Image 1: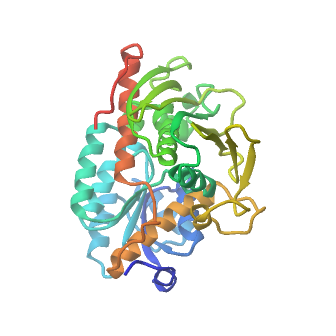
Image 2: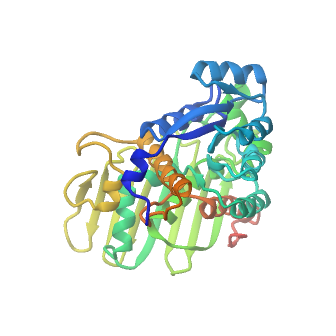
Image 3: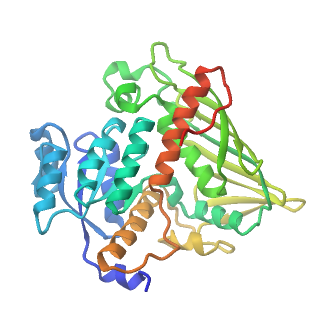
Amino acid sequence: MAITAAHVARAPRIRLGMVGGGRGAFIGAVHRIAARLDDQYELVAGAFSSDPDRSAASAADLGVARSYGSFAEMAQKEARRKDGIEAVAIVTPNHMHAPVAVEFLKRGIHVICDKPLTATLPEAKKLAKTAEASGVVFALTHNYTGYPMIRQAREMIAAGTLGDIRLVNVEYIQDWLAEPIESTGQKQADWRTDPARSGAGGATGDIGTHAFNLANFVTGLTLQELSADLQSFVAGRRVDDNGHIMMRYTSGARGTLWCSQVASGQENGLRLRIFGTKGGIEWEQENPNYLWVAPLGQPKYRLTRGGPGSGDAAARMTRIPSGHPEGYLEGFANIYAEAARAIIARREGVALDSAVIFPGLKEGLEGVAFVDACVRSSKRNGAWVSLAL
């Protein structure tokens, strides 16, 4: 028997903990909203800061009863409680993902981790082995895979609507690091431009991994090798803030990926275009409810979220009637909802429906390996390299 909507509806809320995400942390609030949107989680504990007083202050702000001064203390004490957390959300800077995850994994607590999986590839490989051995649910919040029209695009490609895929073009461009704001003490810029905390990749690790994951998720293609040209345009910056990557897939398809955080005038320009022997599709995150379809030799047309022509995969991710915009928070919440279905299935001892899809260890490893390959290639003047998986 597979998990059903009835299982999810009657299941008690999943007791959730959070590491990181205290006062002033943007992504922590996003995770909390996403977790609550479908009423499947209850935040009951947190180590919101490595400073016990700041953690307690954040817990008080959020009405969370159990506050901890360290993630290790939280993992130990929560594992001993009968009403302890069942899952933990990790929303720390990248270099802390692995040590935090391990503490909870070895105690059988499910993990929902912000991307990328880890700061380095050796860490990612070690963490993946630990997670697989634990047997728990491990979800990675590549939130753009939760958008309904991205699910629609994936469904169409799998059905052969575009024919054999020939070309993949994906870009993710922003301008928020066009100036050296890390030197002003801006918290988000400070850790994202510090290789000790972000990892070797700057823009490639922060947003390039999203673009790479999205292209893989929609097309189902496997990367064979890549050639990268990375830059740090802002003087003194220690990680890349712009990257151009060419990609060769095992199927023979070719791809290009551009990620930049110094593209002046751009806010959150994530755009995906895919072309096959029978037609092409185009989607952009700033207009996420539309998917443009261009059959070869026929007029281009637009599919809308919840509108005529959209299929079952998009419908699973849709909450409100067509014509009402859904976006970033709902896409994030869809990842949390899919992870909840997996956690509830484990709790109740039932099979997981094959329609439940969310990024996990495989996607996490690929993302960190992508960054590693980009850095290696760029250091070798754009030499073609394979992912070191």
